[in-house]
Length: 198
Image 1 (tube, one colour):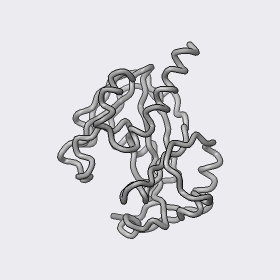
Image 2 (cartoon, helix red, strand yellow):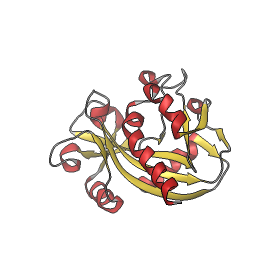
Image 3 (cartoon, rainbow, N blue to C red):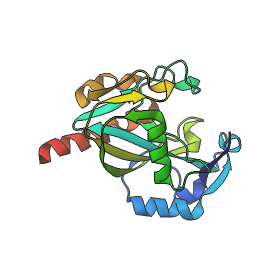
Image 4 (cartoon, rainbow, N blue to C red):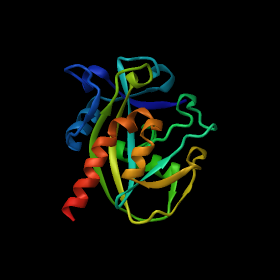
């Protein structure tokens, strides 16, 4: 499996772990992770709640549309098959130069985006501490703003992908994976605020 970036749960959540989306400054959270993180074998971390695996999570947004995809039967993540994530991303690997470098690598590995990325805005930290898998993962959320809805898949999990409006996304909420459902209200606010301010 190889080594991935992790940080002690007590270092990331010194006041105890809480579930939710937390809007925080990028510089602050990245400094804590960069100073205290370690690279460990992924197999050792999958059930060790003393550590949090850091997972960059990217939302691809074009105006008021968001890229969403259905996880297919070919996925190695059996528990997520037929769910609809709004996030792209994955672990920070040993060869990544930084967490942001890992986010860019994961984005490029999963989707062959045919437009330009106009901006990359850090949103905050996402955490669920309810069941076994979620208890060992913490997400860092970015929104990548693109200028085109043209794309091709690179990852077999992304064959069934599309851009949808926030209204259509609400219809898929029940089928979304855990972090996507949790972040959806915040994403709705982001899009509505942009509409209001333009």
